[in-house]
Length: 232
Image (cartoon, rainbow, N blue to C red; front, side, top):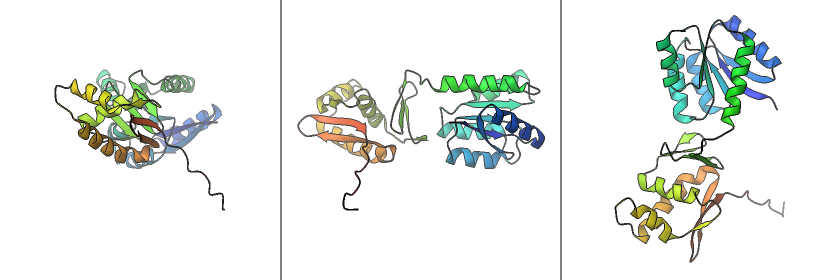
């Protein structure tokens, strides 16, 4: 399967040359030359990697980058630009770019850098855990569903961390109370039920479910597809 690559480049001649070269290297390349359009496409479509110019019309590349990073923190993004000063490179990397290549450049180097980014993207950091479309970053204290940030309270996030540490294993209410008790606040069993109820609602679109195992506790697992109706 070809690697899906998104290219945002305002130089139409360069964009066409890049698309031809990358296609020959077995990249399936979509290309636009407008920053606002690039942002909308990236937020609503899935790509394996992005090559992003900074000097885009209607919305500059750094603004596009910052917005995309809020929703797709693990998407490999390489900045390709004529701005080669140290301050510009630092600004690009600080905005969330994974790599920075200045013009002029050799196509072979761009392809090699993209391959390196793709290799790294296949290895999640140890602090990051994924189940279905749910992703949890323990170090960053954040969670995403379908690449969109989840709005979780501190307690809900802690409960999610406990369940994610025990995927496909039953976690008792007492275990959760004990973990939450480390936060120097008393937590009752009824409160645990409230946190789990809220989490269930927020995790519904993620393809995961929190099952209640009567008399034992809770089980986090991937949602199973509905069986086909035998009468049809």
